[in-house]
Image (cartoon, rainbow, N blue to C red; front, side, top):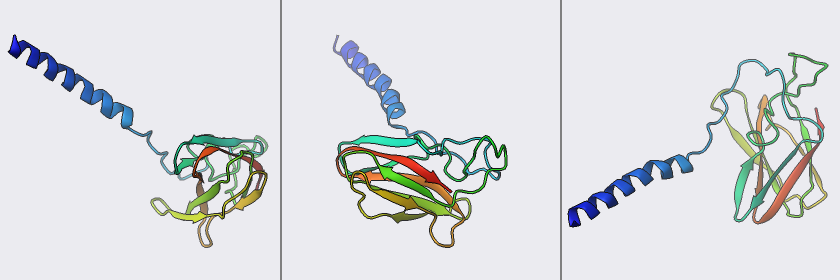
Length: 154
């Protein structure tokens, strides 16, 4: 009986391990494309938000803004210009820092962190000087509900 109980515990433990690993995997990052995508969610009115229970970052490019490298509209079709700047407004109640992730080629990433942006304030996010692509925009907050909305894209 002791052997049967030990076997049941081992089988249960082994069955739980793959499930735990699957739950902790993060979603894969998007690959950098050589040409602009046909459409994107980076548009005036788009919102990136998250509830923070501790200091962390939320990637708007992977969550709500889509691909931030290009500014696409229906009128432009497949000829989307690179994003030069994005003006964001803090529409949440929590002060937030905006982090611009930029670079000039695959694997090259530089981060530029803004000053704390209070509720209602606006900030222009651009690639770092010398970089050609704005890859992502991150929200960074200490606690509470953080949200920013796109006011302008150039």
